[in-house]
Image (cartoon, rainbow, N blue to C red; front, top):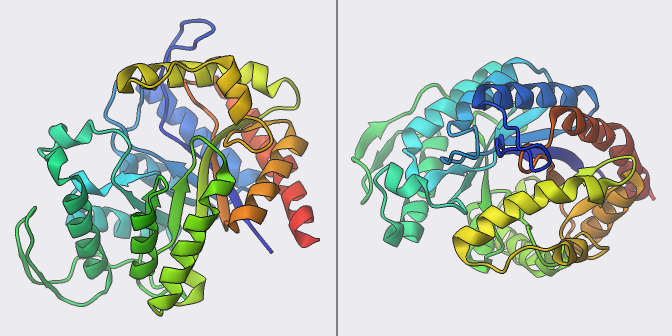
Length: 349
C-alpha cells in the first residue's frame, strides 16, 4: 500500500514567541514558496495552502499563492487548505482553479470547506445563520459547473445562471477527464462524512485534538455512503490533516512555544481552557493527535493512524506561530527523506 505525505500552512506571521520578532506577509509567502520547492525536491506529494483573514496570517487569497507555487514546481500537487466555499462565488472559484489546473497539467486541488474561523462571513456579506445552507448550495453549484454540461441554476445566495459553461475547462487528464480535483473538508462531523460519500468526493479530516483513531468510524461511514451511492472506488480517498513537527532531536521542546502561542490566542478568543505543557504532552503522546518527534517517532505514529483509519494521505501543519524558516525547511527535509521511506517500508510489510 502507498500513502501520500505532505504539509499544509496558513502562512503564520505571529511574532516569534522566543524573540518577539515577526516577519512581513511578503516574506512569509516567499518562505511558503521556498518550502514548496523543497517539498518537491525531497519527494513529498502534496502542499496545502490555507485561507485566513486575520492579522496573524499572511494568506487571505490562497489561489494566488497556489498559482505561484504551481508555477515553480513540476510534479507535486498543491491545493487549498481550505477554500472557504461558503463565502466565495463558486463560479469565480471554478475559473481560478480550472486556470491553475490547465497550466499545471492537473496538479491543483480544491478542498472545499466551511472554515473553522468566521472572519470571512462579515467580510464578504454572508450571514452566520446561513452557515450550513450556504455550503450546501455552493458545493452543489460547484459540482454542477464541474460536470461540463451547460448549467441552468437558481438559488438563494447568488444570481441565477442560464445555460452556462464556465471556462476554461480543467485539463483533460487520462483517468480523470476534464474535471477538477475537488474534495470535502470536515472537522469530524458525521453528516459531512455522509455528504462527501454521497457526492462521490474525497474527504479530508482535520484532526486537531483527541485521538485520531476516534475518526475511524467516520471514515467507515464515508466509505459506506460513497459505495452505496455507486461512485467509483478510486475516488474513495481519505486525507488526515493534523499538527506536527519533525526534528532530529528535542522536537517537543523546540515546537512547544510555537504551538502554545497559537493555542493561547485561539483559546482566549473562543473561551476554551488555557493550553498547558501537560495538555501538549498528552496530545503529542502515542495515541494523541500531534505528530511531534524524531523521524522514527513520527513515522511510527503515522503508520499507527493509517492502520486505524486507512487514510490515503496525511499532511502536517508544522509552522505554527511562525516557526523560523531554517527549522521549517529542515522539518520538511526530514519528512521527505527520513519519515516517508520509513512509512513506505512499514506499509510494504
